[in-house]
Every structure is written in C-alpha cells, then in structure tokens.
Image (cartoon, rainbow, N blue to C red):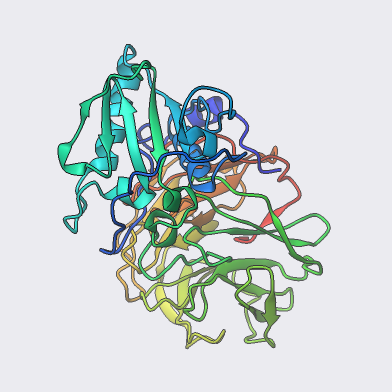
Length: 435
C-alpha cells in the first residue's frame, strides 16, 4: 500500500508551497558525539544481499535525486576484490558531462565532508560510516582523511557515478547517523522508539496499524496494532504524552470523553487508560503537540471562533483550559508540530480556500502572527504534522480524495518544499490518526 510510485507532477504544479527540493538530502540534528573515521577493511568474503545502512543511504539519494542506483551487491565471480560482494558498497549515478548532475555530485560530496557546528571534520561521512568514495578520477579515504582527494588511476574513472564503500559499522547501521540523529528531546510521534516519526492509521475494518517513518521520507511496511478502533473514537492523535520519547495515543469519543493509551515501548502494544476527561464534544478540532518544550504533549482545540490549550501533566491528564485567542473560525483544519527543532510546538491551519498558514509558537502557549505557507490544500483530507525523515524539521503528510498519499518536507521555517513523490495509494477509507 505504501510503495513509492512515481511523482505527482500535475498535483505538485497546482500547489504553491515553496521552491524546488534542496540539492542535498535532509540532515538530522545531532549532538556533538561523533564516530571515529572508518578503518580500511577490504572485502574478505562473499555475502548475499544488501546491508541495511547501504540500502537506506541509497533510498535517501533516490528520494532526493530521483534516479535508480547502479547496484549494491555484486556476484562473487564478477571482477576482483570489492565491498560490493559483501553488500556494503553503492554505485549511484552522477554524470560529469551533465552540468546538473555534476553540480549535484559536488554538493553531495561537500555535504558529506563538511565540518559540523561542533568542529567535527568530515562529519556526515563519519556518521554514515563511509570508508572511501571515488568520483571523477579521484578518491577520498576515511582512513587517510588529511590527504583529501587523491588521484585515482583505476580502470573505471567513475565519471558516470560515485562509488561509496562503507565500513561494517555503517553498513550495519551502528553509527550515529542511525543511532543519534533526530530532533532535540526525541521525536514526538516516534511510536517504535527510533529517530523517525511514525504514522498511525485506522483501516476500513477498524484495525489500527503503524507505518514506520524512514530516512527516505517514506513509510515502511505497516505493522498491525489491533482491532476495535471504531468510529466511536471520532478523533485520534499521536504524541508523546509522558516524555519517554515514545508516541502515545490520545483521542475523543462521540460522547465527549477524552481517552489516553500509553505506549508500552514495543510500538505495537498500548495500555488503555480510563477515561481521563469529559466535555470535549463541543470542540470542532483538536491537535496534540508539546507547546512548552517539556517533552509532554499538550492539547490545542478550537471552539467556534476561539482557540484554547491545555497543559499536559505527563500522565494523560491536563491542566485547566487556557485561552489562546479569537479569529480561528475560518480555519476548519489544523495540526501541530515542531517546525524548526527548537523543542516547542508550532501550528499550521488551512482555510476554506485551501490556503495553508503557519503560526510559530513562543514556548508558552502563545503564537506569532500567521504567515501564509502554501495553497491548494482544499483537495486534501486532514494533514498529519510529523518529522518523517528525522531531520528535526516538521513535515506534512496528507491524502487526496483519490486516496493517494503525499508528503511535503519541512524547510524549518514553517514552509515546505513542493510535494514529493506519491508515497502511497489506497487511503480512501483509511483514517490517519490526526483527524
């Protein structure tokens, strides 16, 4: 259901959301801790398959540049010694005679080898566990980093692709790109505990399923959580209620009751709390977001023209209602998340004309003056605000009336890049847990 199937060129053209996609992949937020340089570790055996760190790095490049790779695994009898035969090398196409692709390659390599804000040289190459790279007659070796790019005299000049070889830690996803990346305080909607926000949704048969986020800004194979999620629960949302770094579930029922399900840490098991509140029937729209930066989800809700919020206590209960302001009746749908990774929540809303607006939170339950962030949203159902690719910037996910699922990557300022490829289909009768 969630296979990435081409692009949505016509749809993207109709949406005025921002400039074209950036020239390098999304960058997660990291602490200062960083990996040592990958050591020299040539191929010593032959292993079938692709190693996960290499496969997901390939997915990251494909999501950014839209071209299929030239291969990871190579048969044992083909050629000489190569990390391809252990599934820990990648050839990705960049042609030096194509000005656009050459610029992409140069920017990508500069991104991998840049010094980070902590003074760590070659930071992302180290975090990914890259052992060496070959491009356009030159080679860079992690185990000889101070020598920079050196002439490469092998039989293949690598003018139509970059070769990436990974050390075993990077190939196995044991390096900090995979273990430490993400926004400060942990993702608000990571159901399974990794650095990528996940999406919960209810199928037509009232079954709740979890769709794991990935670095490629797509979703992995869904995991069944359980049945019984009927339309009695007329609104559901995912957020970290108790500050343990795991996305819990909060929802309301038709009778106005407020309910809380605690994530037991597996991503597929929840403990149902007793009814933790009443009187929610009058509110037209709710979103669950940490407004204050204490890593505990709060509630924001609209009642007619008025917007209110309730501070989360960290146990599924909430403080008294606090007034945000008036003038919200023209926004029938909204959602909350952290636009820029600063730890406190922000809001987005759409009006009946399909325009998307953004309000930056001030960390105390208030918001700055709205800015317009896009248009064309009246063809979509409820949108989910989440950090799908783990870069610390909120993204949007929504389905259109035909049931096609799309995502928009956040730029960190409340605006978004143009719609990316369609990342799913068949969502006509599926309720994303942000409704």
